[in-house]
Length: 496
Image 1 (cartoon, one colour):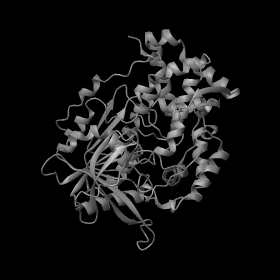
Image 2: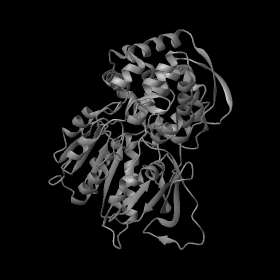
Image 3: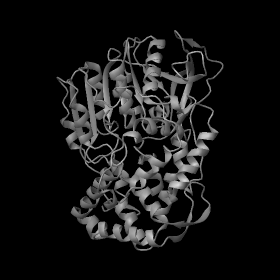
Image 4: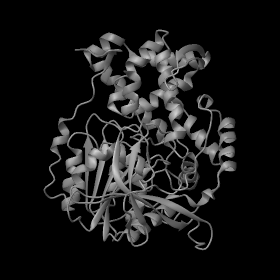
């Protein structure tokens, strides 16, 4: 039950988080007739999730672009593009696009898992999807590593893996930043002949969406940003601070819940004791590997607990498991927590192109990272800040537009979505971005975390907004009825 819930609901990402799982585009069937666009040849294909269970019919193709935009005759790379046709006989002249987070996640892969949220929009609009350069099948900058080592989280090991990744790449990683990526998206729009596009971005994808709005305001008909990363916000110290706030909120909700508090007592105190115990003395844990099914033994330290805890705070379904896992580990049953940590670390290199991730953070975040007090008082401490800084001692810094870190000003309609309990991009991030947007609406979804497009009535709100390109008749009161998942008090589930 625990493993299945994690696969369904927990994000697998290192920094900002990704809310949905992976899919791959399959080779088009040769017997089906081809479709030719202005500059992109699209052929029928089926894009699927990792397990090969969920799939979406689409048209797939590539657009060749210069790796270095300032050297059009230099090295060329292919951007992988998919189009999911609308259900209407005649589609609207403006398409809809989805931009995934990470950084390093594939937008096409994200769409397959998320597709139900966008079906109302697809009634009359084509969905165009572009794997951002460096991700998915657009010259992915992938790194491989031993997932058992990553829990050590030492700066030396981080530098070692980063250098190995850099040496193995067949690419110039300087040209895989957001400033370059938005130019690619505009080229795809032009090549496919759409008058404009409606842009949805989640997590890091909100940064891409906002910068696209800044660079190509006439091309962006509407914008939806979900789990907002304001343009002038720097990824880094806030990871630990926001994460601690989210964890404290889960502990408080457990304390206020009779079933949870009765089952686990002071879960905050138990977590603190567990942290101290495993920091001082790792324990040997025997378990069945959740990824392979094989019996294994590992030395479990606090990094396992920290990694699993962070990922579990992203969604209400997995947050409902945290008190149980912490209580069990505190009582000496470490295997359930260790299994979840193994699943998180094993998925990182599958779901994220870490080279592209590094190109983004080393150009757009680490050089601007401020010194913040209080990190040592959080459950993550300075681990993430030190890891980011270590990566960027090795990784080359790429181009960034001069105004990139300035707030985005626009009068285009922008819908800002936030989860009330988001541990990485909380609602105040949306407030910050909204300050310079003159035509906007902020919606906070109560009791939910990172990425809320699939929650309750949100898909229908997005559809109404995109259709009208206006907020005048948009009634968002339906989100107030959403509630968090009840806490698991045993491995069988919540109390009846």
